Length: 71
Image 1 (spheres, rainbow, N blue to C red):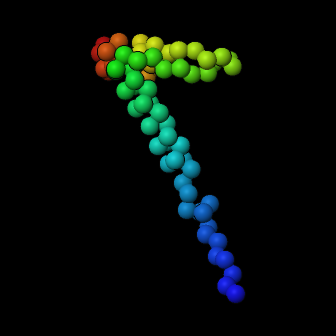
Image 2: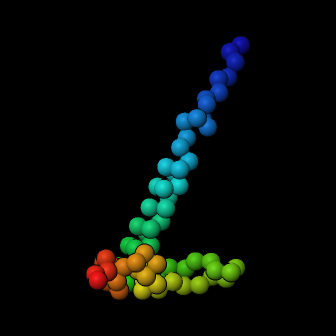
């Protein structure tokens, strides 16, 4: 009977790249909701709170319209 082979998955997975991809996807999702004028909810101190589009833009250093701030 054949022995099952195991793949060296730990050597093949780049956890830093996965983390970066997830952070980018999450940022894009938040900014898309904000640009559509939709608040999102998140957990703060064990409570669910709504985050306004203005708060989302401020979190990423953008102006109230979601554009890069100019001097």
